[in-house]
Length: 55
Image 1 (cartoon, rainbow, N blue to C red):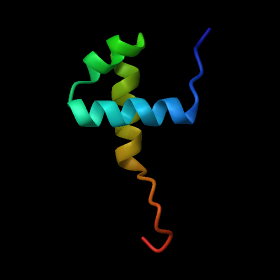
Image 2: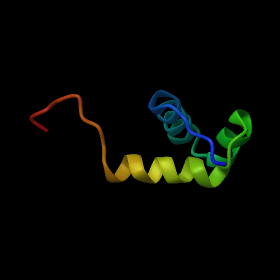
Image 3: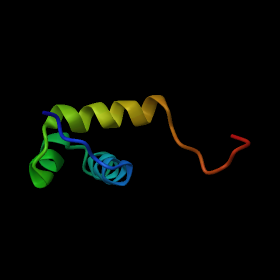
């Protein structure tokens, strides 16, 4: 069975991974798979969330 994570948790993990440039370290800290951290980071880069609706 797979684990589900909240969007807020995913955003926190992505931010930490981007700040540290070390997905494995972040994954260990939160006891999740490094591949999941890298996946979330890639998805965030592909579909950035903007606060400004005009771009």
